[in-house]
Image 1: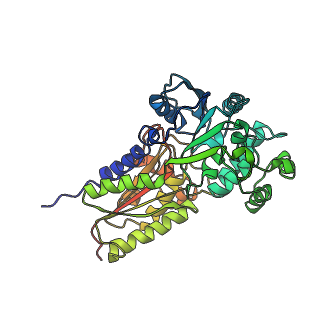
Image 2: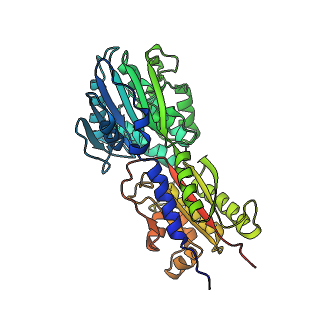
Image 3: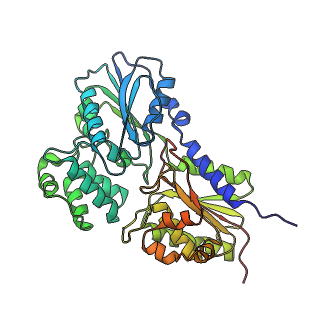
Amino acid sequence: MTTTPDRRALLRSMFDAAIAAAQPARCLPPHLPQPPKGRTIVIGAGKASAEMARAFEQHWSGPVEGLVVTRYGYEVPCERIEIVQAAHPVPDAAGLQATERIRALVSGLTEDDLVIALISGGGSALLVGPAPGLTLQDKQAVNKALLASGASISEMNCVRRHLSAVKGGRLAAACHPARVLTLLISDVPGDNPMDIASGPTVGDPTTRADALAIVDRYRIEVPAAVREWLAREESESVKPDDPRLQRCETRIVTAPQIALEAAAAVAREAGVTPYILGDSLEGEARDVGKVLAGIARQVAVHGQPFQTPCVLLTGGETTVTLRGQGRGGRNVECLLSMAVALDGLPGVHALAGDTDGVDGAEEIAGAVCTPDTLARAWAQGINPRKSLDDNDGHGFFQALGDSVVTGPTLTNVNDFRAIVIDAPARG
């Protein structure tokens, strides 16, 4: 008699390994420089910034001062670097005040000083400094509209950079003439530094015309003051060749690919062959779910292009165009779409989750789907397609007891998806 492998446990072990591989305590210390002649000031923003600050303190030999802003619930104790909490994904007054304090902290520096910028995903909302003539309410309105528009993360951040007093290289310019070392945890497809927290310390080659084109392309309703600002030359971001950025260096300390490789190692140990299909998948979450389901079906039914048992691993950042009123996030939307497309195909188990522990606005990382997911939903009177149409991925999977809850992970390397495929389906 053979026993059925516990695929739920394997999926969760891979997800946990991906998160562990991206922990600041593991990946940040090798990138620390020698202490400078002058002051060392640590600034930062993002869901991982507090844990990055703690890792920095534990491995820094010289004096240090600073302030970082992280998401509510992601605070960790630090001795010399102040941790401030603020709202994400829509900015709030706490983020605004923290950003003003960071700008004051880096003013008046000298060539002997060193600024360490600890930047991770989520920093776009947490580091909020409205451009001249704009208000926090304007930024909140634009953020909400962008999140519901279906625009890619790169497009959203292009708009954000041109509406900010700190993004798009402006924070680095404010540090001049001090040396600036930016340590990044990437949460964006392609690991482009200008898209991680909207690039507060790196030059931005995009233009205000690009930002306006994105607003128009997605028919995003923005306050009048936003269009008025983008029409002015002053709205241009700091460009890569700006002399104020000459002493700026940027290093990515961990990224989605590293997390996927850690998950792949767990699969190998379990006797399941891993295949990493990509660390930067983008597109509508429900469309990505359909494509992944199609690939999984080809593997399960025909043994192509991979033999079973295997696991398909992907990362990236999908988007959701809101149509319904449900409790959704991009990972559960992708997973529910996949489940609907698979329609109970035997031998296929999957997990989709956000490595920061928060999918959408819920304190839920993601969910698991199994071959009997749809049957269990129908047994409870839940229509899977209606749940998908209502963007209600969290409501759907939570009712089945299939939500994945991690709590604050203190890191963020974007979406994680794993599809375990066992013996070919028959019939």
